[in-house]
Length: 175
Image (cartoon, rainbow, N blue to C red; front, side):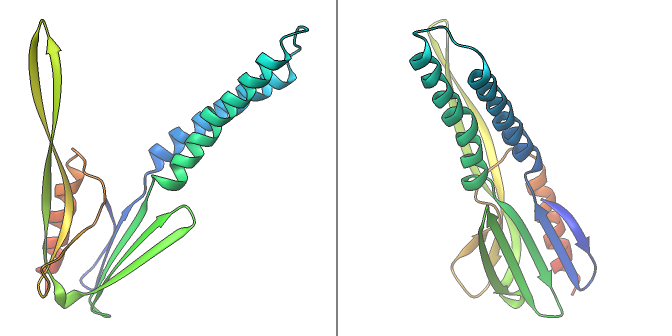
């Protein structure tokens, strides 16, 4: 997440997966172009069924799957900490669905990193080697409830999660 705005009254964090979206759109456009080439290219007699199946396969696998991934898997997140309204507003957009969650600012104790270890196994010369990949995500710890609120659904191995937690905690301590 990146800091979009930071002042004493307002902290806005945004997580916009532009690179993943761009890659998926380019993949869909590339496969759409291949499908168009297949449609307009002349076919030899007896190959119509094969070319038709190729066009359907290219369209479904190469165009619809990346667009489906954009619509279902990619989340656009905006988190607004507002002292004047005493709220934290978390907006998650997945294509056309918008989910808005509001938490009272006084309910937020702090932010911390939740860890998850992904263990990968690899066999080299008959020996199984296990590699641990620590993953993390930022989470809000709430005062009055036993619940915690993850700011991202997915875990990642980047330093951005730790930076996000540091920014939130520094802003919360500014009272």
